[in-house]
Image 1 (cartoon, rainbow, N blue to C red):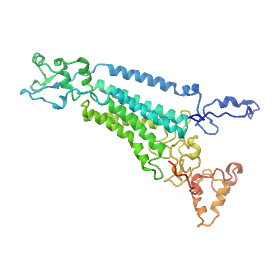
Image 2: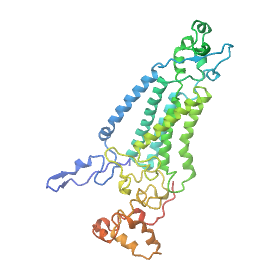
Image 3: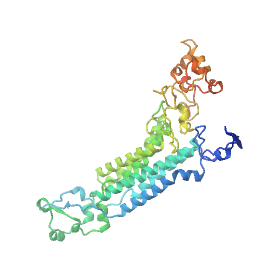
Image 4: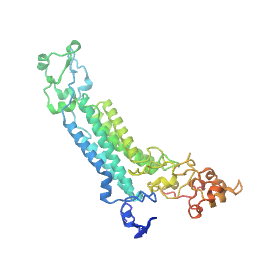
Length: 422
């Protein structure tokens, strides 16, 4: 068996429609999704996948080219800056730090923020085994990284700011300062025409705001944080193991360390780092929500979204599209096709307890509702008494083969023992 679940094919060769025409089921089997059964967790062919994602790939390539072009462009603004007062004292010592080597180069920050999450996504598939889960995770990660990168390079180019080592790179020439009178109060403000340093280094030192390192780190690692939270169910309806909390917050620590290193090598001011963290975080949250059904709601945040069919939040387990098991943890019933009630407000709607009584069959309804009030088994099913198909009249009208106790509400059955594995 491969890493991802294989495509399934209908064994029937032909079928008949209501108008008597033959229907070849092989044609239906080539579809990437079994729409009739609501199961979307199937691996498509490469052509089918490309049909769904070609526009995203083209857009990401275009945005990457735009971002690279803006990154290589010279700074748009011409900033004024002071050097010294009339008595020779440096006006802003915060911009007079020496030029040092970066502890974490920008290429390494971007590489770590992309490859580490992708590696984790792939490792998780040894248990999850879902093509669309890893597809949405990788595509969503690229949304976050590319979107945040383009966003921040435009701010660098059009707004920018002075790096802490700007004066060391500029190396102001006193003779040029005398030849080019300053401006502003007491004529202490100058332009870059007084600099005698390397032109490329001066250009770079004028583009401090925001931090590209921190933007990439928070975009990639915060996306991974949301993914781990969803797959490990750290903030869920049960008490998880402590190691899951550590694993979930490890990417956040990595992002903070990358950002903090920039204040040690003096490549960025603290507010540059903060701005980059905010930009990266916003894109991580937005991108995760684009490809998964929720960010924080533990009932849905592990479910990949599809392009062709909207996710029904009130449809219960039937609306999961075959992604009920798309989690890594196996605690408290997660990762199994059986569904258990008991989580807050799940008796009203949601995967862990669908709309109360939505699929309550007549056999199950009568079994539970006609037992003594003190009966434990009967009390466990009381949540199924308020749904759409509850009651003797509506239940008896249902086909016994469809509702004969096999499709009753998940929230109307008692808790069952579940494995205690991770």
